[in-house]
Image 1: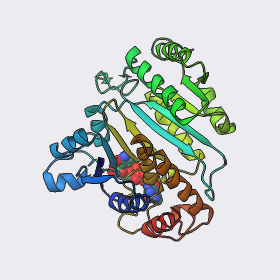
Image 2: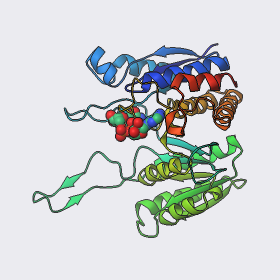
Image 3: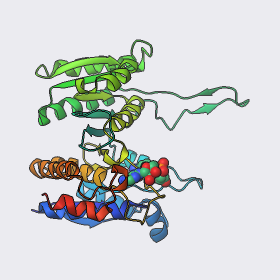
Length: 334
Ligand code: NAD
C-alpha cells in the first residue's frame, strides 16, 4: 500500500524549497504520494483562515506532514500557526539533529547529535501570564508533569535504541529550580534505569552550554524541557553552520510534522536563492519515521557529497547556485 503524506508548501521561500525537496524525494523513488494542503498566508488569502479545517483533516488522515515555513501575520490577534499545530496534534517531542557538513563556516567538524525538546509544557504556558497594574512586576508560571517528562525522556531513549546511539544527557536546572526541574530530573532518572544498555548523563543547563561550545563531540542525544530545549537546539544549529542546515520534527503519539527550523526568509523569497537543505534533512527524518531509513541515509549522503564537491551551493554556503540547481546536484548523486 502506498503511503500518502500531507505537503504544505508554505509562504516566502517555502514553495521554492518544497519543490527542490520533492525533486530529490522523486529521485529516491520513495513511493510516497502527496496530498497538498494550505496553511499560513497562502491559506488566509485562499480560504480566509490560517489553518483551514481541510488541512487539519488531511494531517489527521495521513498522520505525516512535510511542511515549509509559514508566515504568521503580525497583529490582528493571530497566534502562531506552528504553536497551534503543536497543540492540535499534541506534538510533544521536538527532535532536532545537528550534524556537521563539509564546507560550512562552522567551528567544528564531526558533530552528530540530536536535541529532544519537550514541546508542550514547561515555561511555555499560554495561561497565567501576568503583569501588575503598575507595570512594575511580571509573572509567568512553569508546569512540569510526570506524564510529560516520562514520555519525552522515553522518546529520547527509544530514539537512542532505534538509531544505535549510545548516550542520553538530561539537561536541567534542578539544583536551583527544585520543584519543576527537580521533577523532570527525578523522572529522567527513573526512565534511564529502564535502559541500562544506554549511558545516562545528567548536566546542569549552564554547564551544558559551556560544554556544547567547548567539547560538543561528547554529546549524542540531549533531552530537556521546553525552554532549555529551545535555546540549546539553536545553539547546536549554530555549531554546525546555521539555520540553512537545521531540520526539525514535531512528533506526537499519532501525528508527526517534519520541517526546516528556519522561517520564510522574506528578504530572499522568489529569487531562487534559498538553501533547500534544511527542509531536505527534515524530509530525511520523515523517511526514517515512515520506515525508509535506507532512503533517508541515501539522501543525507548525497547532500554531504554535494557539499564536499562544492557543487551548486547556495549563497549562504558561499556558492552562487540556485535552489533548484542545488537540488539537481544532490539528486544526481542519489
Ligand atoms: P528567517 O529564518 O525567515 O530568516 C532569518 C535570516 O536567515 C534571513 O536573512 C533569511 O534570508 C535567512 N534564511 C533563512 N532560511 C534560509 C534558507 N533556507 N536559505 C538561505 N537563507 C535563509 O527568520 P525571520 O526573518 O525571523 O522570520 C521570517 C518569517 O518566518 C516570519 O513571518 C516568521 O513568523 C516566520 N517563521 C516561520 C517559522 C516556521 O514556519 N517554522 C519559523 C520561524 C519563523
